Image (cartoon, rainbow, N blue to C red; front, side, top):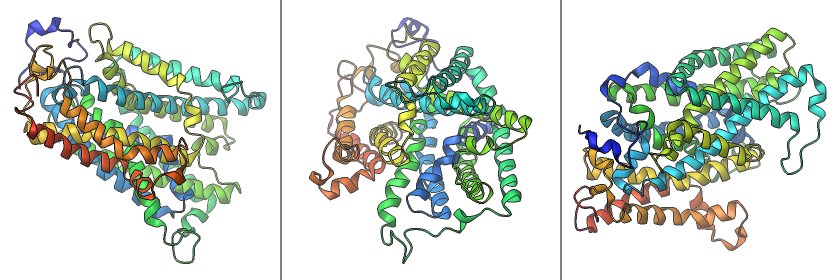
Length: 496
């Protein structure tokens, strides 16, 4: 492994947060990575994830299998991209410089950061809404406040959102060690809470109820017979997209790993099983609420507000807020904070990048993103996968196929080195990215109704359902093709 020489500390591409982590700073073992994924996967969006699939016609087992399979697929690029972080101690935006160029790396970094800002806002809204709902139990008048013009939510809702937002910002200010503490605290806490909720639902309902007995709408004789695959493919893409951001910026965490085995096994043990288990808990408890309360409650916050014991209610809500906080900081702040810092390393620190992420999380008005479950999967999740899939394909093709996992780390911080390519931009990577995104644009525009779907060929709309797969595979092949056509290898010339 090579490392930047001391003179590169004055480079405009270097700051202490983006520098390679030394051996003394690599404290994360297998349990830390398993805890990372148990902590991030055991969250309210995971609990509610199967609801959109069941609402679209799947039965519970089809929904859980789709979620598990999607996470098994995304685990592959997750482990592959994590390799560079562990081997060289570098974060995601620095890793991007090898393929995209010293300036070009800002393009995938900013694209990934903007998606994370949306997720930061969504998780912050969920945490704030939990606080709001517990307050309305004791102060019912808060729940009757009129929506604010232009926002669509009431002043008490917005105040609770800002309160939870402020807690997130405080943790960002405290730094990476406080994040690791939160994750280790949350992992067992949320599993215990989920299993306790599951046991309560089983006992109170005398079983898990009608949703688990509900047949698939795609089965023979049902309303959507013969339409399963048309729904399954975009749904699978949506499940992959759920963690598509982390499959790119996982070097931001794997740079702290003791060794490759820790990051690979820790992620494998932590991600797919936890996602499937917590989604099942969501389905089973929701099904039981139909019997217990006579109404189907998909949101665990709505379930917990039905409890009459104040102590149980407060403990459960505090646990949910800690859970949401830990997921939000780890999944949606660490990455974009580094990505934004990469725009101007000497001016923007990790903390400043985190503050900018938090501000954008307010401006994006996240409550509107999650208002419609169908739009949540087919517009939000599938839509951004069309951007992130190609980035993953390019990075893996560059690092594993062309470079054989060998990086000149010093060159990644050198503004006049081989990774400057053409004025800091790798034209091969940018061309592959643009061409891999193009096939999914018509389907996306039809999905968001910016153009009339009737004017878009059916095969292009169908193609959009495969957005992540199409983007990843096409970018992988095109990038290698453009590099083969180039007169020199990507690490050998500043003008490749």
